[in-house]
Image (cartoon, rainbow, N blue to C red):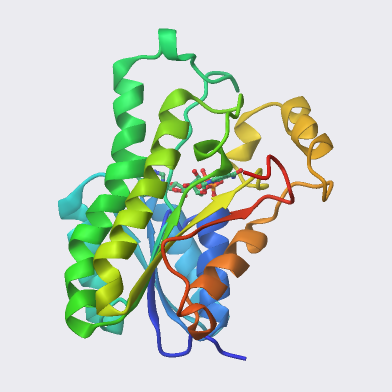
Length: 254
Ligand code: NAD
């Protein structure tokens, strides 16, 4: 099966973790993948690993919070592969201090702003660059990476993080309404606790407590999230839009 053969996909934050797995899964399904990351070594290494497996990939460095960098990165990917059909807004940050979040009353304004800029404005920037082309072609699909922490209280993350992940749900629904008439679907994915470098910024005990509260009894894998992204952007999901889909093993059941 090659569900995405011929599609051009941009994955942000694709240098490691969930984004890298999404890039690998789409490439394995025949897509040409733009591997965008702030960390140029990781985006290059991910793209090289995909090319070595005979897949189509192109690494680009950009900070999603900077629209000029996003525009340049998209232009580079489109120059190599053609118009971007699928946008996966995955890049995100969740600052910690020795594994502990800052509480709202003590949080530095610069830390607050940095999370809003990356997790929320970063998604707006890619949409500002790519949605016009999708509208003119009357096709496309967009996934925004939310979190169960945007739907329920999660003591492991800070108020900035949960605020942006909740905001992405409104962002997704609004965009789905605007872009639906052009045949473009927009959905959000809300992962639970997924085994990535981000998750390892908190203590093993904290992650064990999540596993104990998860009916399926384990952390999620990046591939669990990637499989949902593949489905939501495939032909099989072309009547699904404006939805928030949890992939959390039953944790929180938001
Ligand atoms: P991660 O920290 O392992 O990887 C994030 C990637 O995004 C990194 O490669 C990083 O360099 C990149 N990135 C960070 N800031 C960027 C920027 N300004 N511009 C471009 N790239 C940037 O994180 P992850 O666990 O793979 O998380 C991926 C997404 O999934 C995030 O949006 C995160 O909030 C969300 N999420 C993760 C979990 C989890 O448990 N891991 C749970 C719910 C939601």
